[in-house]
Image (tube, rainbow, N blue to C red):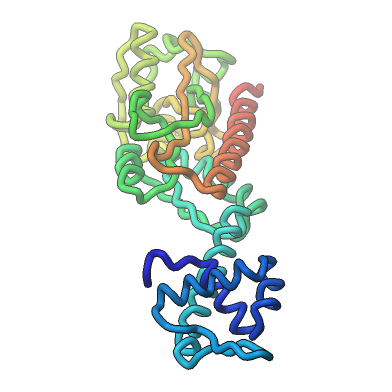
Length: 310
């Protein structure tokens, strides 16, 4: 099809063929009759044959036009369907969003965010990917994710970030641990107590080491594990204490453990929701960011209350 053929020409052709009248077709299209005649004439020039036989009583499609009409009607139906889908996307009635988050953050935050989003946009599907930050960054760059949540490099021109929540760190120990009696323990209070920690190479371990260093201490774990569940189980069994961000308290398995906010220094960790800088977010993705914000604020409020209660 020539690139000079327009949708308006095709719609004028369909309207005249169905109405068998240029006047009635013009009324149906809400156009002046000379404009409809001009559109049909221009289309005839493009296809190279006459589209209508004109009599004094009515207008009838030529045999060639009838064959052409089937294809044109299919094209018009496809365009109308595409426009309906586009409107649904704009109104958040359909669509798909792929979102990534580190495993612990995914477990703590994403179920609440997805449930909130489903209430407002039930026909948009959300795929959750729980992978390490480095993997999520690459998947975002490769176009496999629309959004990613976590702590990313502050200087990265390839991504656009929106601040989601500021998290802090807490001491986690058994309720019968000596430090459990302190309402606001300091980092230096951890000296001399067995530390259970995640292995190096993740944000939680890096922040833990920063806190120890700021207090003039060296983080020397008595035990190191790859999974947070193992760390918490060892703390519960009485092998030592650990340090977790507030959102990590989602994984607490029993009332035998207590969390206390750490101070001096009071370390903060920024969590962002990011997307590729060269991509425009869909209305659905923007709405999902709003759900993330509500879920993050609620999570922080609940866990802040939990670590400061008596």
